[in-house]
Image 1 (tube, rainbow, N blue to C red):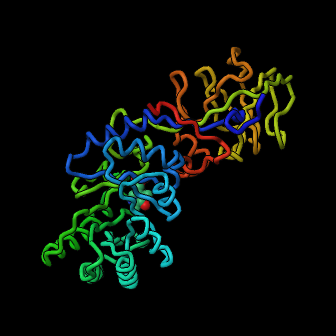
Image 2 (cartoon, rainbow, N blue to C red):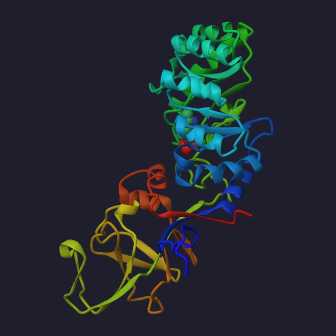
Length: 380
Ligand SMILES: *Cc1c(COP(=O)(O)O)cnc(C)c1O
């Protein structure tokens, strides 16, 4: 037997990425959007933990115009893997990164005059006309030039012969709650900037401001392009936003039963002896723990086994958690358990895990550790 890396036995715990569902979600979004509105698929942080390259390939086939990323390294990795589509770096750039961005045709957002001049000089050096997006802060007070100082900066971009003002953008602080007052205020500020540009005859090809929440609930704000992230992965940004039927989560987390213990009354489970059996119990051990990104819970949460809920007992360890399968007698060694996702008619949602973690769905998706291998399925 050869012990080569290609037949390295994989851990019986993994994340499953259903590229068929990803494709379907993108199709539903594409169908829901007016044809003229471009789709920038946000694939930062390894496509919210789904694997940026796999996601980008499917998204391009389903009509994405380009991709939103956060770090230079993320964008470089996609470029070097052969993704030729526009890559827009949404975050803040250090000056030293700008040359790399120009060299590899990565589009940056600018929000102050010094970066504009610097980028223009680099463009001269590379003999390129470099597209830029101006990022405007309209009330989130994070990245971007203030809305009431945006026009002079945009005029500086336009004045640089080697730069092309391709886009103007802003970002909502809250777009997925029922109360849209603040989102509307932000959009009004953004619209004021856009009107001022029109009065000055400054054309902008891509005016964009909608994340998933804005895309779903603020159709009047779609403008030229929308930037959904979490929705692509099948998770709605909130429970009160518009729901598109058929959108389904792309990621599941699974493990196989690696041991089974029978407990007599009074016997305990795990570190800290946090669970004691009142009656005889059958306990299945799943080889996945907080070291894989599962929330550090005690006697809370469950796994699906044979389509039924097996409650978690005791405290979760770094590499293991224990579930009670007394009521699932058919559960056997190496049976598949679902920690997040569907099995049979039941589902543990990303939101369920977020509750256990006292956090948000975004945090759950992005924080499964890579020692859980990603297994892509239904990739065609
Ligand atoms: C992350 C991000 C998005 C996507 O947000 P979702 O809520 O996941 O849709 C859009 N725009 C910007 C600027 C972002 O940073």
